[in-house]
Image (cartoon, rainbow, N blue to C red):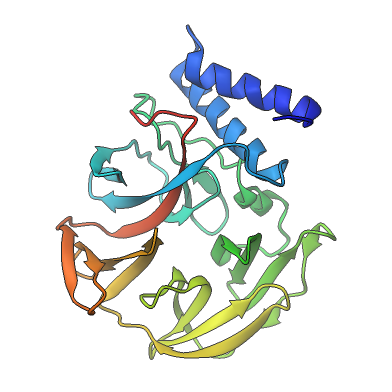
Length: 269
């Protein structure tokens, strides 16, 4: 945290509360951990905490974390929404708001903390109304935010100006979106009902054809350390091998799957 001034002091406080705090309520410790990770992403140009990639899948009984060969049940809550990757881990998103999911331990509280720790907090300041989709994603070592409105318009957030760019119309129907493709590309992709995949350029808010077609047997794709994982329509998670064959990682069944960052400063329990 060298030369980071008050931001480093604040971040160290949150980290110490989370890691070494005694007689704190588990929910407060979880919130302190979220604040530390949020500060790490918002304030520092170089991330001060090392991170690794893991998989979070949603089962009938709640979220399940796959981390370094371990399969760990995580706490869910009563909030109904789609699972989204965030800078601190994952949230549930329902078109209007997002609720943070706890990645690191079972607190027993099943709390529903508003996501004020990633760029999903922009939902509270948005003039776009209820959204079909919202994504926080990285491309070319930069972080971007994109949204699809109920009126089938694309809007990206202009960080230098601190406001949303003017929404532009998206031609054709969008069946679903993705942040990774089976071919390994990462970004933000719009998938049409016929499977045609288009890529969003967040810098110019442009949409281009990729020439690729989505296989709807795949519900979602995750790219972790150059491993391609697919969530199949059957609910199983499989790994795509170099020759195109699929190896079952977990039979599930799961309804959703996202890759999530985990920070080495905090122990996963």
